[in-house]
Amino acid sequence: MKPIEQYANAENEFNKLKSVAIYYLTRMYSKNSAWALTAWPIEKLAGESLEGKYAQTLESLRRNLYHYLSEIGAEWTEVDEETGGFNILLPGTYIEAAKALQTLWLSLHLVYMTSANEPQYTPDITDLYTLYSSYISLAKKLYWIKGITFRQANSWLETAAYIALLIGPVTPDLFETLMLEKPIATIISALTLYMKG
Image 1 (cartoon, rainbow, N blue to C red):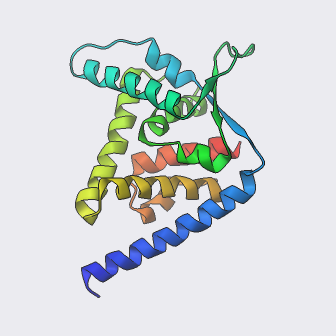
Image 2 (image 1 turned 90 degrees about the vertical axis):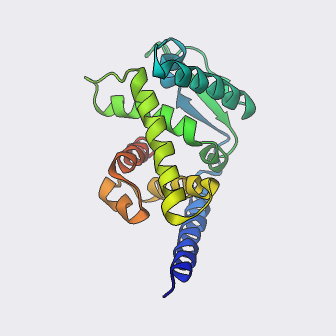
């Protein structure tokens, strides 16, 4: 089989998985009108400052995040009495909220999930940068190795996240079949566990 044919077959299979994933997610969650996500990473991001090579990245993350939240119509909830923190309310059905989990939001939000699974560990601002950077790096890797557009690469990663929500709990090893490196697979596994409650 020629490389072009192999790629076409792989892409078709992936699109089928995506269609099935979205179908089931829509069925499972269509009755919900909004989704609350913890604002802890945003609070962390808003209160930090860095020097050197991270300074510009932090400022860019902060600016893009606030613009992103404004664009999708997200709202801040009242302070949670138990935790003292805020939640962010994402409008729309679950699938609309899931589509809103783009590179930046996914990387930031999952910092909280890491700390939730390991209470003794408090991520610092460089962790936010590292997660964001690793997600982008993987998308770029797909872009170069598979000869697809960056948008397609990001779409593949989003698809993996959708699938993770369907069949959890999911181990990082499973995502190797989706061409995800272990750091990213671990992140998506954390998302699976969190969303499954």
